[in-house]
Length: 423
Image (cartoon, rainbow, N blue to C red; front, side, top):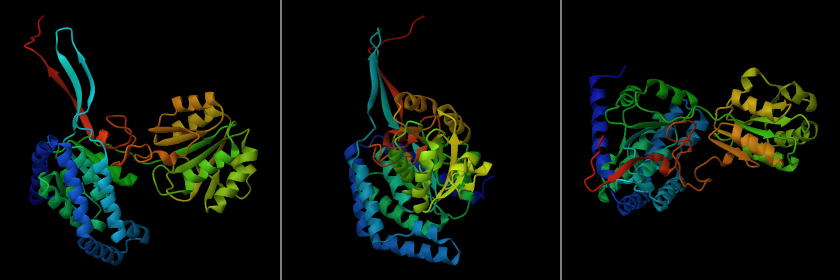
């Protein structure tokens, strides 16, 4: 399933170096890690010209290859964008260090003192698309949480990623941390990625970040545990006790503030009692914002000109100014719809009825559920966690925004005075 022996040797070498670096980084103090991050930010600022030159070459190659303009826009870097990358690294340095945090401690009757302590995961492989700022973000978060990281970005931004990684590696070494704590797969093509995803002797966790196709491919190939979210099919349910003005603003924000992100709303569910009054005003506001509405027969009977929704529209992550609309009989039907078509990412209820809200919050099984707030808040920064590496919809290890604490695991530290177990 892998590539040539040469590719295998190349990837195994990276993995072994990462494993060795992870052991050294795991015991690095907070001051050493923060110093390295500050050094990385300063070095990227000083050498922004190198990064921008590499980025121009990526953009020129992408244009020649016919890469669509929106993708080229995500790749593009200028001095302001590089400055934003530097600021993001400094923000990670300013965050609290989760490593060494005592989560719980207790003493047994026999005198054993037991502590549950946060420790790094070890070696994380990060596979992502397009945006070169992810190279810096992922590297900074992994360094701060004491993890070595192996990065593999999209081929369209390969030169930019190499330039960013080179600067950050050199800054890490200058600060006394192992440069191999941050490595980038520089070979184009898929063979190296396939080899990487089977290197379970060196890598502890894989985090894919990108579209559903990328994440499913990684999950299918990998012999290493994968933290993933396939897509964000997020719902706004407007209950019969909703404030119409509030519901309109939340819906607009969740759909239009940034439609191409995983926590944007894709389906609007409206209680049949409030639908005749609410839907026309909401439809007008959404249409003014350029949103195409696709409704079920009940919604279309209230709002003329609304396009009919196909079965495939329920459960579709449009990532565009398109919103599916359905009128439901009651809260139970709304919850059932979300359970059937949702992706367990972010779902919200708008209502003044506390009992209805609490039922929704309890029964909707998503990584984040909201009462009278936009789904766009499912984000590490908005939750006050600081930077994140992605949003997980998994049920194992981490769920929701994966910030610094979610990039750690724990171990039990047991201190005794000669106790032995009997019986």
